[in-house]
Amino acid sequence: MVLEASEHKNKNSAFLNISKKPLYPVCFYNHNFNGSQNPEISVIMPALNEERAVGNLLDSIQNILQKITFSYEIIVIDDGSKDRTLDICRKKNVTIIHNRYNYGKGYALREGFKQAHGNIIVTIDSDGDHHPEEIPSLLHPILNGKAEIALGTRFAARNSKIPITTAINTFGNMLFNFLIRRLTNYKFSDTQCGFRAFKRNCLLHFHLESLGYDIETEMIIQIALQNIRYCEIPISSRVTYFRKSNINRIKDGFRILFTIFKTRFRNLAKR
Image (cartoon, rainbow, N blue to C red; front, side, top):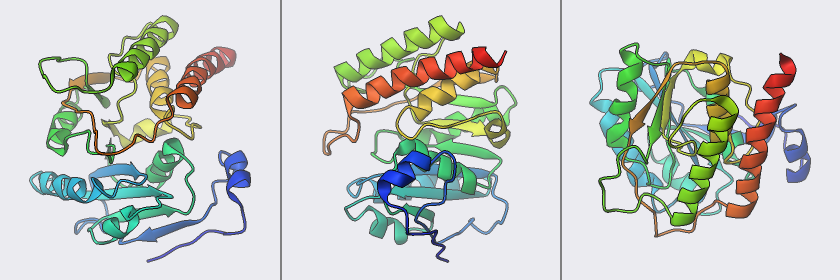
């Protein structure tokens, strides 16, 4: 099945109106729910130029999910990749949302959330930093009723000799963690980790507007401000050296800072 929206908007106009009218060139491929029209778990993975990692990662995710007794779906949002990412994903038994332009990780995740059917949603990065073998660890506290959201954290257990991220990214994460704690009185050890699981109904409480990497921060602050039950789950991670990061440290860093203060003070204004 292929569904395309209007192609008469250029990239800049779409970017300006994206939060108001999200109708942009999008294609859907290979809609499959692993034998179920109502999957219990949806795995959402945004991807941008990840041809060297995405194929093996999808195979690993499917292998892990097949060992779990719950029905599932995997949704890949190809955010305007210029390499073979889309072609590789088409060969896998997954749902693909193809953005013809690169709108950003936040926009990609939001589109994935709209298409997800699962009662529990898992988000995972496509660069190979996260280990699909740890998906059950994220699901466990939610399935047992101990939390509504499970946040992966790379900094809770530092017993690995393998670098989990670069020094500058570690510093930035610590800064954002500190600011969020001061503004919300909630402590998070890894506000920038994209490996998470949460109940579908949590989306009803979120008001997400971010287009880029700041969407993880936006979600964290809304978790704190709305007192949603969460827990942090230690995960393993590694620095991916074989490809250039899509993150612009300066631009995305300032965007994250802006999102922290905007989300916090917008909530104060509503009171």
